[in-house]
Structure formats: C-alpha cells, structure tokens
Image: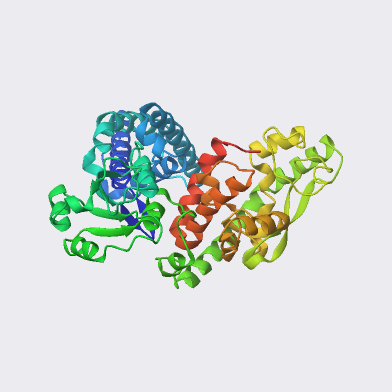
Length: 461
C-alpha cells in the first residue's frame, strides 16, 4: 500500500487511477482533434490547451472517485465497475457543461464534450477488460507471514481471502503449543532459522497475531526478521491499515497512546477545516435556501407540527448543542424518549421518507456548521441519552467527541445505517480511525465519496 497523507491506498487502485487519468487526457485530446478537423479549424499546439484538457480529465476522474469506481466491489466486478464508470462520466460531462456555461472557452464545445464522453466510455471499459485479471493477480499483493495460529490468525486468513484485499498470506507459524485454529500452521520448532525461512518465501511483511499476553513476544525472532529488511507489524495496526477502522476487540489504551496518529500538526489542519466549513456552509445555504423554504412549507402542509426538528446532540468535547433538521417524523415520535430508527419506521411521514432518501432533511445542518458547532466531515452527532449508555457499553466511545461531529463522515460512507449497540460499536471503529488519522486530504476523500452515498442511499432511514 501507498501511504498518502496518513491514508493508505492499495497499489492496484493507485495504478489504475493514474492510468485512467492519462487515458482521460488522451480521450479529451482526441475528441478535440476530431471536432477541430470536422469544422476545419487549424490544429494548434498541445501546449495551448493542456490546461483545459487536464481540467476536463480531472473533473471526470474526480466524479469516478466520488461514485465508487475505485471501491472494492468495482475492482472485483466488471459489471459493477462498468455501471459506475457510465454514471461517473455522465456526471463529469454535466459538470463540465456547467463550467463551460459559466466560463466559456474555445476548447469546451458541447460537441467536444459529447465526443469526450463516448471516447472515455470506450477507453475506460476497455482498460478494465484488459487489466481486471492482472490487477487482481498476486503481482499486486504483498506477501505476508503470520506469527500465530489462533483466533487472530484466523481473522487474518478470512480478510486475506477477500478478492479485493491487497495481501496474500504465504505462511502461518504456530509460536506456542496452544490449540490451533489455523491447522496448516507450521510449528516454530520445525524452523531452524526463521530469518532465512522468511527470506526464502519472499515475505515482505510479518504480522504478529499472538493470542493474549500470556505468550511472550518472540523478540529474538522479530529482531532477526527486522534485520532482513522485512516490515514487522502488530495485529491491530495491520487491521487498521487494511480495513480503514480501529479494531476495538484487540486495542488497549497503550496502543492508542503509542501508535501513529493524533498528530500535533492538527492545529494547521483544523484551521484549514474551519475555513472550508465557513466558506462551504455560506455557499450551500445561499444555494439551497429556496429548497429548504419549499420543503419546509411542504412538511408543514403534510403533517401537523413545526417544519423544523430541533434536538439536543453531543458535540465537541462532549458539549451539547441544538441540531436543526427538516422534520421527517411525526411530532409525537419521541414522546416516550429517544429511540433507534427502524427500517420502514412508522414514525416517518410521507414527505419525510422523500426528504430522507434525498438527504434534503440534512441541509439545515449547514447552519450548525457555520456557527462552529459541527463540521461538514466528522462523526455523526448522537443524542445525549444514547451517548450515556453507549459510553458504558463500548470502550473508547468518548474518544469520538475529540473531533467535531459532522454531516457526513468516514463511518457514514463505509458502514450502512445502524440502529443498535453493535452497529454503534462498528461505526465507532471507523470514527476512531478518522479521529486518529484526520487530514484535509481524508476530508476531501470523504466529501467525494458522499456523492456515492447520496446516489445509492443504502440503509437510509
């Protein structure tokens, strides 16, 4: 994996993304030359239009990232990838047409955009037909050895068996006489020189998956492996990197304290985040005010009660604030206290179902962002009652309040809507990853991926 601004990107995804970007630039150039030749326009030097061509490719490429073209399902299913590519290119061309309307140029003609669209579809689909099996081959998978044969080793095997994973486990070593879950594990006593064994297998990384603390760390073995130039990682750090979440089942306070994360450079990142929040919230409120007013009137007409829903939520450092949304439930929805939303929740009104599906009910939260109570990106703000009970049941739950809550977030784009303690636990793993590895780059990725969640609202309630 490549680490980019504290966020890991698989080699196959990075290679495919860069290749797609080059192909999009070539498609844009070919489209321009085709149209210029048709109308008899003189072919100018590439240097005079490269900014427009690269800009065209970047807009379409960002749309591809936004709709999940580089997600795990797209990488293992050609049908899924093809459908997302079509959606992404269509959205990109629409965005380019709007840009051309606002900033007219000699390079963005409607006919050129149409040609670009057709060529982009051809080259990107052909690209995936040719490279799909190659990108999924072992050439792009890191060779991993697991020290351990218990439950943690089994979890790594299940993770490694997934088609989209970026590593292949080449050997398991049973470091003790404890009962094995991974039966094919080789006993440590059967290997004379572990360093030479690692070298012969071409291992690039060793993961320490020992059970509990009753097993003493094999320091001599780890030192021998390390001096061979092989990366050594603990189980929790490996899981965090490969899954984008912090594994609550195996971490402890010392791991959070000593592991990489929670950088001191966050002051600069926080300033950048706040400037973005203010700018984006002002623009969003200005653009969507007519929509908010229209649907507020519709909500008022559809059912009795106020158009807006106000509720206490827990914010930064556990401080309460008032969340404002368009009302999507009956006014008596929480007469007996707050409770989890349900699938096909009977408390949701007719209009409420529509605005929840389109995420229109979330728009007034931009006001909370402008006031500084929320951010566009961060953990979902919860009701104080839920927070009190979840902090008792789930370890480290209070740590999610070390960053501002957000309208969208890492958990929201990676885990479907949840309405239980177990769902909250799973989402906390993503929230902790975000709090630990926050950078403006990660915020940018989340904002792009939110488009996918809006277009395909899985689990929205």
